[in-house]
Image (cartoon, rainbow, N blue to C red; front, side):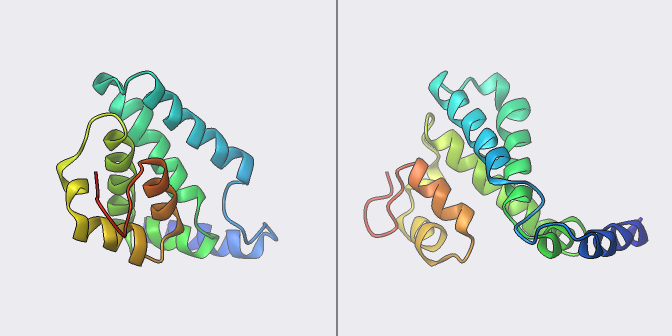
Length: 135
């Protein structure tokens, strides 16, 4: 199985595809829109898996370049899971406050100190301030 992922990675690297990432900005905007719609509908908990987790996974994978995409699918699977969890928590927090996101030190690390641009976007949407109150 690992050999298959390596083959896909090599194919993507040599395919002449854009280095921006596996999906374009318009597709990323669609995933953001779907998450925003879930929030606008009051954040029905029965739809978390089908609407939040699925779209967060697509968004996380769509906001990295091809080499990181391949690594997240193979050698950095725990990092992929963590990024999806952050997206899910931040999205849910917009409707149903999450205890982890009331910790100012955690919010500062996630929203201000992280090199992952997606985290900053999630924090902005969830009104999480890395410099101040995390509520």
